Image (cartoon, rainbow, N blue to C red; front, side):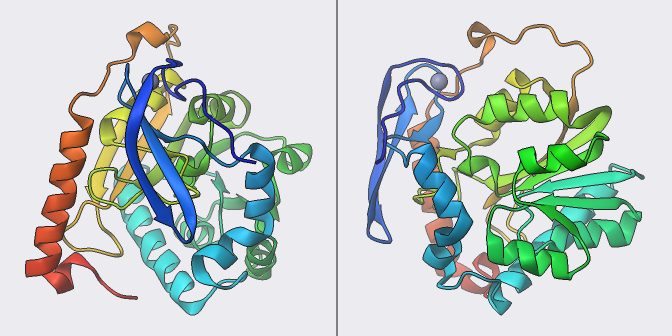
Length: 293
Ligand SMILES: [Zn+2]
């Protein structure tokens, strides 16, 4: 059954107010905004057990009507992998080991391996996708715990493309990645939908990030930001649908307590303005605003 989120996933406050409520593919999806820090998160949300079984099999069925990769999905992943490689290769010259969490068909791993010649390891809970990615000659595990038993060396790059918004406790998750799996000199690559341009409020999206709240989550998890990009690739030439961030572990891990979180203000107004801008762009520049795959 779905459960109420008692504390804000970023600052821990219990006060929140209704931000958005809508039907998504037959399910009622309710998002609330934290009264203290301005983070937007789904509550009530599906339970951990529901989420686990959802990602093992139903997720792809619900989202694309098929459990395995479709041509459309593979084309989108290829476009996204190209854009992410462009973003990273400007900033990171070389590295040896890459872990992609939620690696899907393995397209991003394949692109990075082709460019950097690095070892490519993936984690993917969806069975049909895991089988497909293994067919590309990649090493894929169903979970981080399963991977940990086999892969003992830390990674130079850990990427999560369109994954973080699906996780109920992003701060603890990223802190664990930093402590257990990432080299101190390593990189974290993230991409999430942008609350101020993307529809965002899907049943599987547990947290909806702005550039500000994502930055706060990273700081609290012990990361410093190296680069941020707002863009629409591969789906739009002009709308900032996605936030892409490159971060690295902070060397000085002074405690980043809940009282140090910088709240975000006027989140509702920014969302309304962003969605209005999107509507205008789609109306007057439809071919630049949305590129069909
Ligand atoms: Zn909060």
